[in-house]
Length: 339
Image (tube, rainbow, N blue to C red):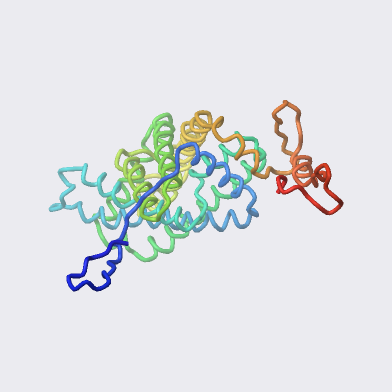
C-alpha cells in the first residue's frame, strides 16, 4: 500500500491500492486433463439425470435458434437490409446464436456435440468404458431432441412468434428447406466443420478462469460456425422442425434422412476425432501422474510403470495400504517423513 507524505510532519496517510485486473488461463495440457475429469463425471451421472440435463440444453439451443429467426426476419422484406445482401442474415445468425452455447455451458447442462469430445478423451485415456460412452451419447442425444422440440412446438409455433410475421416465416422456411437440400456428403462435411469449432469453443471455455473469459471464448468459434453455414445437429432439431411447422416444403423424412443423420455423423467425427483425439494425442504424455490419481470405473485396467496390468480395486487397495513403521519407531508411531 502506498503512502502520501504529510506537509505538517504528521503520520503519512495511506492510500488504498487501486483495483488490479488480472486474467489467467489453463495451459492446453491442463485443459486436456480437465476434459478427462469432466468426461468421467458426465459418464457417472444416472441416465435420467443425463436425459433431464440434456432436455434443458435442448431448450437453450432452441432459444438461440428462435432468437436468430425473430431478429433475422426483421432484416428481410422489401425494405430489409438483407434483401439484397444475404451476408447480413449470416452475420445475424452468427452473432446471436452463441447465446445458446453460453447458456448450456454456464448452467452445466448436457449437449451431445460437446460430449462427443469430453467422453471420447476419457475413453481414450481408459477411464470410462465404451458402454458408458455410448449410453451417455444415447440419453443426451434424445434428451436434446426432446428439449428442442418442446420449445419449437410450444414457444415458437403456438405463440405465433414466427407465423405473425411474413418475413420471419419466410426465413424459417428458407433455413429449413436449404438444410434439407444439401447433398448427403455436403451435410456430413459441414457437420464435421461445425463440431470442430463448437468443441474448440468448449476447449477454450475450460481454459478460462472467470465467467467473462468463458463467454468470450465460447462466443467467437460459435459465431464462426454459424456465420460460415456449418451444420449442427442439435440446432437443426429446432430449425428444421420449426420450418416444417410453418409450412416449409419438406417432410419429416427429409429432415431425418437428408440432414439429421449425416450431420450427426459429421458432428461426432468433428468433436471426437478432430478435437478430442487430436488434443489427447498431443498432450497425453504431459500429465501421467495427474491422470493416475483419477479414479477409474470398476473393472477398468491400466498399466503400471513396469507394465503389469492392475485393476482399479487393486490400485485403490494399494493406495490405502498402511505404511510399515519406520525403523526404531514404536507401535503407534510414524516417521514424520511418511506424512
